[in-house]
Amino acid sequence: MVEWTDFERATIQEIFSKMDYDDVGPAALSRCLVVYPWTQRYFGGFGNLYNATAIIANPMVANHGKVVLHGMDRAVKNMDNIKETYAELSVLHSEKLHVDPDNFKLLSDCLTIVVAARMGNDFTGDVQAAFQKFLAVVVSSLGRQYH
Ligand code: ZNH
Image 1 (cartoon, rainbow, N blue to C red):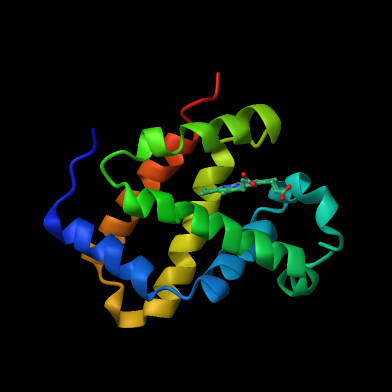
Image 2: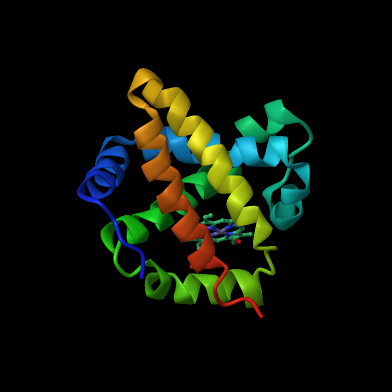
């Protein structure tokens, strides 16, 4: 089981409570698709992903970015039980969507960069450490049901 300090708990709650999901979700997913173009293979049904401009303007990418970010709410609300919380979502990504679990880390890195840019000077080293610890637990939990 993961141990959280009071600072880590407060930081995660605060980041997500202040976050504009409609901005950050699309920005993180579109950045992932631009920086790591092989991640586009899972979104064949999303239409035009021809270049960065098209990816950023794509409404299906934007919508899915919000879905993924809202998926993280479950971990924020269940910080002591993230593994169990994501059991079903892990099975979905493994058995149905066949998403390579390495991609979870790539998306989480893009999310870190977007949140850092939005928070500016408030994104101190301590805040980054707490945020990346949280994302590492999310990533490992989503990868848990892969065989
Ligand atoms: Zn994922 C889906 C979450 C990552 C791909 N996702 C999904 C959903 C959710 C999620 C919630 C919905 C489900 C239902 O419907 O039931 N993801 C998530 C999270 C994360 C993720 C939290 C973190 C990290 N994903 C991811 C990645 C990828 C993906 C990285 C790739 C690359 N997903 C996906 C897909 C899908 C999903 C493909 C399906 C879509 C549609 O719509 O179809």
